[in-house]
Length: 247
Ligand code: FPP
Image 1 (cartoon, rainbow, N blue to C red):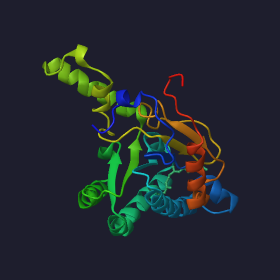
Image 2 (cartoon, protein in one colour):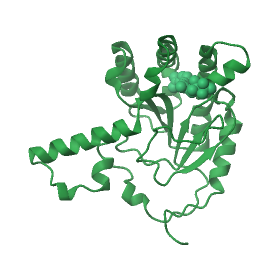
Image 3 (cartoon, rainbow, N blue to C red):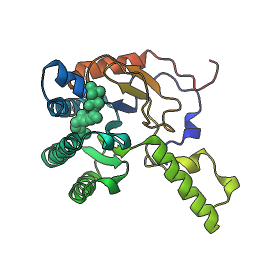
């Protein structure tokens, strides 16, 4: 594991650039509504913001960028909207995979892939395999992802191993839980940004964000560009992280 929750529980000097930035991309619908456009138009514009932020993150020296693309709760949206979002994901994987590869981006998807259409599962596996050795930036896309679902799965995995006698329950520590999450091997996010003025975590990276700095901005996701990203990094740079300690 790269960084366990335990190893993060120490006082860290402020870092100019966060190593891992996570983003809840919110406000596509409101962006479209304000322009009397269908919600799908907001999601399409949101995809352009994804492209801009991936580039900006790479340039800024961010090592991991995690984007909340589709939550486990988003399946409850109208069928047409789910179709639109899945269509955009297909398009992104088809159109942008080679660009990402050229930029040295490694793609990793977290979430319940089994709920995705088989062709999307295949595409994801292909792009992950193609970009696996890239090292400039790891782009983690959370799709059909829920933080509680992830923790339930980890609990089940631990229980299974304990029942099989391959794991001593007393030996279960924070690192053991971390290692059974979708994010195994990925350091915890230093900075979590949520756009569109909402100030909640919405079941995103619940375990991983124990010591994360939160930055909430009013900008709607489709308007979030490289300047907005740079401003969020600046806000992070001004925070003092204590991890519960007195300094
Ligand atoms: C939230 O806006 C956004 C989403 C549920 C989906 C995010 C998807 C994209 C940015 C497009 C494609 C992304 C990838 C990774 C290919 P909302 O619809 O909840 O907006 P609202 O709160 O204003 O209604």
